[in-house]
Image (cartoon, rainbow, N blue to C red; front, side):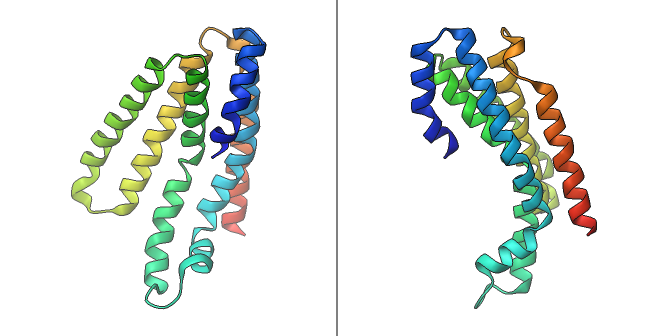
Length: 178
């Protein structure tokens, strides 16, 4: 939903400025979005049981259902940032009328997801399926970033993203042990 809101602004920025300025703008939106998404992803992973309990647990959806669902929810929450970046960068490419690159990246994500899901299929573990799907989305997000910013290295501040990622990981660890 974030990219749906930003899509008209992307179009406006691209029409108003050149490619370098546009990529700088997209880089800022990705950085700011990850600044918000990464801590939420960590919190959803750590607090999956209470979140699912509050939202769903009642009637036939009991404690066992909450535990099973929350474990899968926790694994999928790890892929939120990758999915978000993939979606934002896809819209940025569409604004530039470059549709082949996101198509190829999404095909890679789909193929990777199918391969990884086939690898864990015999385990019958919903957790593993959710985790490999989150991993495939994250790989897709990284590939999208590389493809979009490869010619404009200064448009994305990876050091800021890595700091946000490290801070979110530390926060998740602290919350988990508390």
